[in-house]
Structures are given as C-alpha cells and as structure tokens.
Amino acid sequence: MDLDDQVELSHLLLSERVCRVCGEEKNLIDGYYRTRKNTTLASSYSYECKECTVKRITKSKKKGVGFKEYNRRLVEQNNQCAICKTLQAGGNYNSFMVDRNPTTGDVRGLLCKNCNNALRSVGGDLHTLESMIQYLQHNE
Image 1 (tube, rainbow, N blue to C red):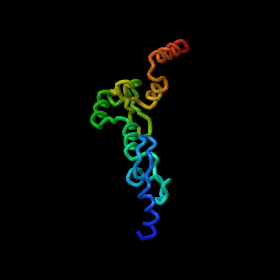
Image 2 (cartoon, one colour):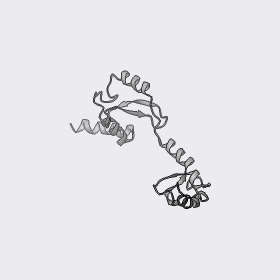
Image 3 (cartoon, rainbow, N blue to C red):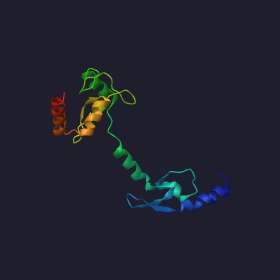
Image 4 (spheres, rainbow, N blue to C red):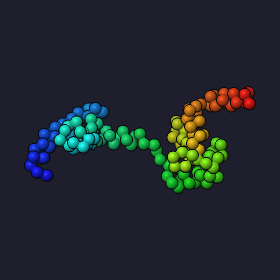
C-alpha cells in the first residue's frame, strides 16, 4: 500500500457512524461491515453495526435439526411424508421439510413439499382444514 492510499483511507479511520438499530456511535472501519468494494468511501460501509448485524442474522436463522435427529425421524416415518405417506420429498434437495409447532418450536414431523406448502397456506388452522375436508367430500 503506497502513501496515497493511506492518505485516502485516513479520513475513514476518524469517521464514526450512528447505528440505525442500536443508536450507538461507533468507528466506521472497526464497527461496521463493508458492503461495497470502494473502501475509500463512507457509503461503502453498512448503516447497521457489526453487533446488530450478527444479532439480526442469528435471530432470523431457523433453528436447525441435527443430522441424527433428522435421520431418526425419517426412520420413524418409514422414509415417507408424515401426512400423505409419499416417498418423494420434492423440493430443491429432494429432502423432507422439518415441520415445527409455531408456538413451541418443537418438531412435529417431516413433510413432503406439497404437504408443507398446504399446511403453510392454511396456517395450520384446524377450522380451515376441516372446512376443506367437508368441501372436498361434498364436491366429489
């Protein structure tokens, strides 16, 4: 790095920015992730500090199911969907989706793509599901 580059970057070393999430003022280079290639511009750094970014990402990630638990559930379900009993999981990786109880977060079972989408579209509402069953029975 030659002297010209150091002089251009020196203005950023003294710059501070207020995080849009936590409201704390932090050093631009140490406290924020770079989001664009040009390191000489303050606009190349995020407006959310590193700590808030990490909190947001870890909070938004789904709580994963370990390989052993997934395989145990799959064996318990005879390698088939818990609802329709199909052997074809569907989806991008042709693997069954993990269905969770929305209030407790507990794993309820492994579902194929179609059953997972159907359950998601009705929001797991039992009244809606019962109405759908009645509709199908009356219109066969």
